[in-house]
Picture 1 (cartoon, rainbow over the protein chains, first blue to last red):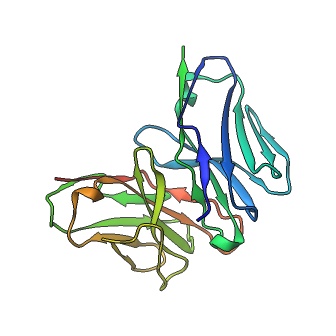
Picture 2 (picture 1 turned 90 degrees about the horizontal axis):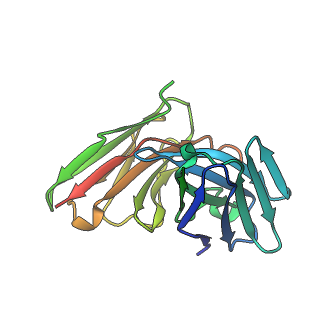
Length: 112
Length: 114
């Protein structure tokens, strides 16, 4: 089946930028999402990008999409301790009835 | 506006016991989903309901049944719980009548089977 891969952990210092990477295999992926999960809570949509876009910026968040390499990244500028969470990459495509397929999640740890 | 509400929040079962996890959404969404989350495994889809009156298997349906009671409610039943079903269960909903339909999640049910 189609796959979404992420590294499991990322540790950064407060104030630095964080970059979380994701690769996917489905060349027909139409929408790519980033979700955030805080401890003890469900996932919340952070942002998404349509496959015909290269970049999307939303305040401290920048999403970059390299469709040729099937690579998605989420950059968080000026990372704060409140950004500590698990970040999930997900993709949806027509072949999957637009039901998102999730990666395993990247645990972001922000040190003071 | 509560969004997606799951009950109970926590549950401990003995092997062989049965239980039903409840989920309700108040966003008038057509589609509802059940996922399980296990350490290092991410989210895996158990069952989904694209619209009221329909249900379909996801990636890991064995040992589970679902009921789409009405547009608001989608329940997940474990008929005979096994330790392998110890997990955090998330219910989600989406509009699903257009191609970009992000999921809205509940806060999860933490289930332990001993």
